[in-house]
Picture 1 (cartoon, helix red, strand yellow):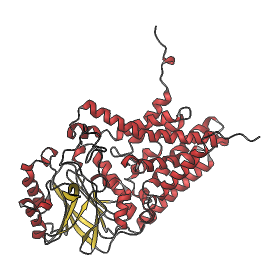
Picture 2: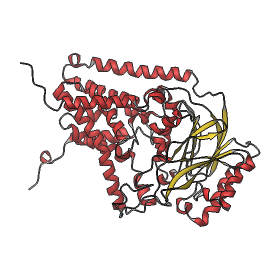
Picture 3: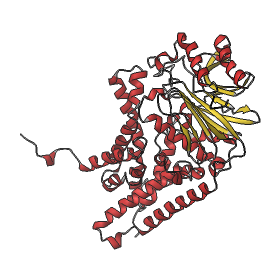
Picture 4: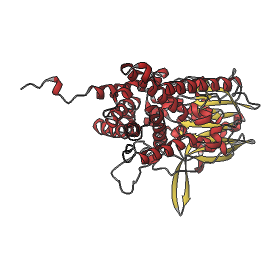
Amino acid sequence: MLMSWRRLPIDSSDCWAFCSGLLLALSFPRPDLASVAWFGLLPLFVVMERRPFRTGFLAGVGFFGLVLYWLNIVMTTYGRLHPLLSGVAYLLLVFYLALFFGVATWAACRCRDRLGLALTLTLPVFWVALEFLRSFLLSGFPWATLGYSQQSHLLLIQSADLFGPYGLSYLLILSNTTLAALWQARGKGFRQAFPRIAVTATVLLFLANLGYGTLRLAEQPDKREQSLSTLLGQGCLDQAVKWDPTFQQRTVDIYRQLSLPTAVDPVPELIIWPESSMPFYFQQGGPLAAAVTEVPRSSGAYLLFGSPAFEMVNRRPRTLNSAFLLGPDGGVLGRSDKVHLVPFGEYVPLGRYLPFIDKLVVGIGDFAPGTVSPLPMNGHSLGVLVCFEGIFPELARDYVRRGSDLLVNITNDAWFGRSSAPYQHLAMCRFRAVENRVWLARAANTGISALIAPSGRITAQSPLFERLALRGSVGLGARPSLYTRYGDLLPALALILSAWWLWRARRPVRPAA
């Protein structure tokens, strides 16, 4: 017996919600259609009324499923996982992240139904609160926070020095909810249902954000009294041979060659090599370490490079993912250790109880976390963000608050292949420069290496998978900003307000007698 289409368990609202998530994903690199974020969630917000959690969750699945597609490249190509296991792990992460979308839409609808609060008031607040929660819950994964979608619009991202990416997230969700309210007012008597307060607030906040960006850029935030000529070495080494002991001498030779002065370009004052660019224990000394120290001695430049390190704690060795800074005489000026490690990449959470789970990244073993330690350099300080530490605003802020005059992001994005991930990673690093009004130099093994000004402007950028030396100049010194001083005050307040609303909405409000 044939079943009619009307009886099939298919709901058009589910399709609209899922497609809304896909549409929103297009605003991120790549294809980087930033303007789509201002209306991409409109289909979800129009149809979510009947089943708010389910539709929000499906939108999250569509969004994170597309934005994070590259995780399968990491897990299958470099993690050596079977495609089936990779697909399962990928879907589990996507479903987990999609919960934050679902909770936001459910919570806003619940407060509307039980407290009579408009979605245009509550949904932007819940969204920001849950993005903030996602940034630290279960070690944190703030990848693809909505505000990052605007990274290519310099005027719009200047407010990051006030609220980080969360101010833009709030404004983007407010825009989407206001558009949804306008759409739904069409059939209810447009004049009577017209959301005047929401429209007014959206327009005023958008214009205020534009005006603030215009004023900040007019102040020429990129200029500094002192500058530093910088060279970023992009060795473009294949992951298959990176940790091969027989290739170590070749690795050192490649980076030494990239750092040599040319007839056109003078010797730089600071040379930066990527994360784990020297895949051996530099601190043990030996011929390879001597070859590295010869670079600053022969050039007279400072050299910052990534290398694993170790230290003894209670007679037990701890391995660290570190950056060493050498002076022009070849002496070690300091070491900075990675603070925020990658779960299942640099260590296995609860590894003692889960011995059957191995790391996805081939390397030398589990790493231990370090502490925030700026590196001293000729009266200045460098704050080093290793790999995906660049996506955590609080770490960059902590380095600047401790006196860092320049942020340096050393990374190895070879794991991502030629996917969108290197572009997404770079987009988030742009916000770190704006938030703290400080220059940021980024050296990546296979790209994208870049020099980023305090305005978020990229002054030099390399292509992917090309061996080269990227040269340019960076300014020294961070200018005061509200974000550096107070940090994530806005999302913290949003989290508190959200909890209060949900507490009030735990029971239906009784109608007045």
